[in-house]
Image 1 (cartoon, rainbow, N blue to C red):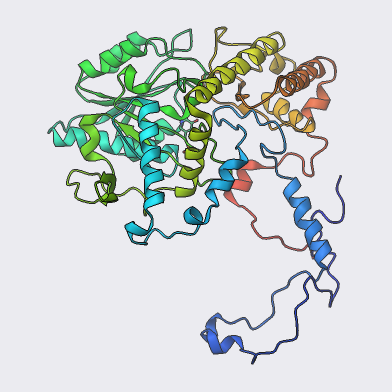
Image 2: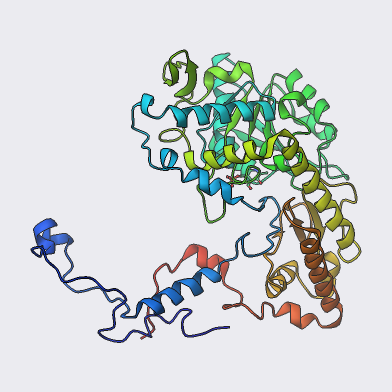
Length: 487
Ligand SMILES: Cc1ncc(COP(=O)(O)O)c(C=O)c1O
């Protein structure tokens, strides 16, 4: 697998070899010191590899193949909805009228872009059952924080300043308690019951006049739909709290159920998950937030409005929490999401949910014969398995994840949610064929057999990748971002 073109580009360097061809200079040469202050000018030439165009091409192509993406293989990373991102989205995002505009342009010169944003807001309002949507937040967690800041502003506007606590179930996505903390609230955890759902008795105990909101991830991180959602809404509303819906898992309810109809006051969506924005590697994303009417005054400003003379930004919003992002959100991701919604239509979006749920249940059932299934009930778009049985034989879930790399798969999310021992969280998504699901299931079954018959092969995995197990903590704390030739 490893060949000289994969990483040894510095070592391959031959003095005088070049990877470009340019015509003779026919204009006066300008030296660096004529255009830059002397302290910014190099005194020594940088040490760059001297290689041919073909060698550099092979080098970068080889590096690109080391990356695993949804276009190169199955990616069942629970909670991340790594579904196929249709290439028509890329086409529309590159239309010059969208790609080449500048956010400081006069509004009358970008009416088409504003119309797209407005229309997208309308579609998302309809999909979520809310009254208005902002496109400003740049990601899911940013949407959570934005929503919580609006809830905070709402309570403050009502003089209700003792509402300092946000209730978060232990099956929520990890960003929920983090966002609550960053928004200045104290997080109160509510337990799950033996079915993996919010324990209503525990909820009743923690809800009181200090409750600012309940944040609910639905379906929760176990892939389960919160069946008592209406009762939860009643309990929290009766105590004067607001209801926040983490809608990043909307792939499981899209066009079937709407947070607004369940009584929720605020919802965020992850357009880079459910609505096929490409994601991974830290962004850009898009985390629009929808609110019910009583929270509209607090929306981030400016708010895009439709007038008789066209679309315009309204800055006159005295109760707004202010801007949460420079300009108006990640426009390119919003163009992609808009394209997806328009190309799927309502029936297409319904089919997304049906197939996402069907695929997850199919996989869960087949795999439950070989791995422990902590919550044996109908799942939504994802499910969790436990590697407890394998752990008893000396193989950890981490080993199973690493072994999957040898089969060419991205492993599922592991060790999350924390409430399941040796957790594997699998989200196949709707865009995978039955053949792909079966091939992955077969690989998982083979690994389960290896654990019983030949555990070393799993414990020592991966065997086929360029590097074996990395020290992930060290890599995060002390990243080496620049290649250095070994001397
Ligand atoms: C349920 C849930 N909530 C929130 C988030 C946070 O979204 P982001 O990573 O865009 O900040 C995610 C991320 O995948 C998620 O799965």
